[in-house]
Image (cartoon, rainbow, N blue to C red; front, side, top):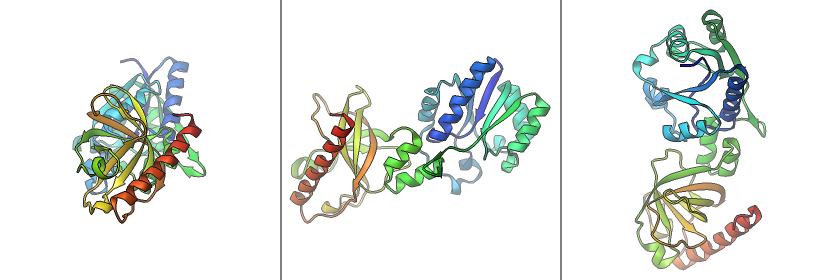
Amino acid sequence: MLNSVVTIGNFDGVHAGHRQLLRRVVELGREHKLKPVVLTFDPHPTRVVAAHRAPRLLTTIEERVALIREQGVEEVVVLPFTAEVALLNPDEFVERILVGQLHARIVMVGDNFRFGHKQAGDINTLTELGARFGFQTHIVDAVHRRGQAVSSSAIRKLIEEGNVAMACRLLERRYALSGDVISGHGVGSKQTVPTLNLRTPCEVIPANGVYITRTRDLETGDRWNSITNVGNRPTFDGDSLTIETFLLSSFDGLTPAGISVEFLRRVRDERKFENADALKEQILRDVGRAQTFFRRLGLH
């Protein structure tokens, strides 16, 4: 393997802070003729060392790798995080992995970086080990948006509170749920409006409510403006979470087998209506708000 400039982390969500770090790694690689490399882990280390504290993840490992590569990184090394890896002390981690496997000449990390058994190493440890093993250590400060440090945990909280617009600003992209389209209860097509019902493996779900969304067919790439209800269908005495999307324009052909739903803005709370007609009237008002929103964006 070529000598490299390496950054290390979980990179869940690949948010604005991650992206700044990744872009700098690519720039350093170009300046010093080093291969830009990202070292990440799967599963998330917390799931191995303290499963009860493991966070719900914003991205699958496949999504994470794809988003990292979009920033120009040449190689993404996914290290299987095992109990054995968790026991490596900082010296062993650096010697075996950063130097032995990745041939690091520059290592760039965030200012809160910790590594090694029981997170014994920090940026000072890394700098000292760099001097011993022959690589430079570069530290990048946290990125802030509107006075708030950008972090995966902050983004999870925003999404789970329903503040998807702010979450998108911190992510520098729209947060999306992807998965299979499944059969619903048949109520919408008969009593209100027909919807696409999403079953998703995604772990971080927006708070119950109605959202302005964009929907993409995973097979064809076709896109539609849409509104999406996340909730329990209280008007129909539902008792399980559903994610139901109404497209603002019709589609030709078969119902998509799989979709990705991007969340742009929260419209309102989910609430119980006295009957299906009252719910349908509210949905049509929601559609009007969404159409106004998309006209302002220039998305018709």
